[in-house]
Length: 195
Image (cartoon, rainbow, N blue to C red):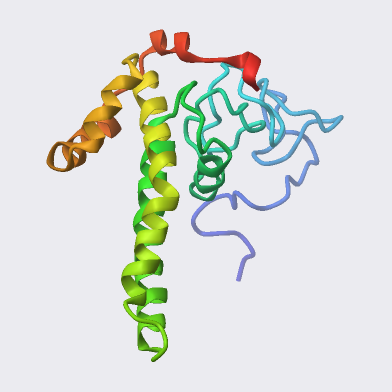
């Protein structure tokens, strides 16, 4: 019996002559002499040269508080909301707006659970409503400020946020504001001097 492969040359076998394949290139997956990368490939973690976020979502740092953070991660949206709680200047991205809306819903659920636990205790009356109301009161002004910043990002006056106060119109208004696209002219509302 022969040691030859009946299907032809084994592509993974060592080159018996020890020479490189034709064309002077090393086999696939092996680096050339000197270990340098070919074809201008960037090393792992390199910055995107076009100023946009890298495709895998990594950014080189957080933007300042006066600037919108496009593509903000979910946990950072919660922290950024509280850092910019009463700032009515600047802009807010769609992701800042919608991630906070999700945090708000999760907060309502958590407040309802905590309130229902307190409602079971005999010495606290109407505890479930109290905790939910406290959460709503704590976030009301911040959400109006976030809405004003979102309006600035779409290049509209923050006074349109007054529609938020009218209950039936306010919910619809919040949805529309969250869906509008960013306009570059909204930079007029940025205040870099406030940090």
